[in-house]
Image 1 (cartoon, one colour):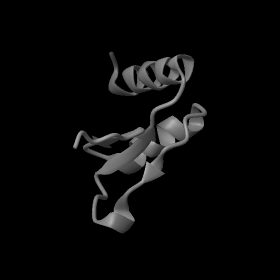
Image 2 (tube, one colour):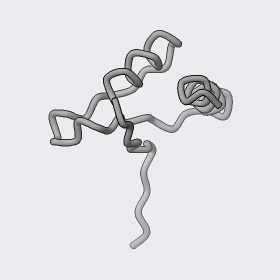
Image 3 (cartoon, rainbow, N blue to C red):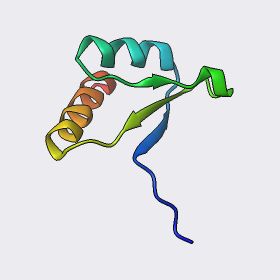
Length: 64
């Protein structure tokens, strides 16, 4: 059976700093430390404009 999901699980060298940057820019993500994945954030897939905002915010965070 094909799998279906509505989120991305993204690994960061410093997930806490990434989380803070995203939150400050209005992007709500979920920390995954409770699942033993403290270096990852869960990012829900949204509308096209929401997804573009996530990409732009991540690009700014990564300096690209």
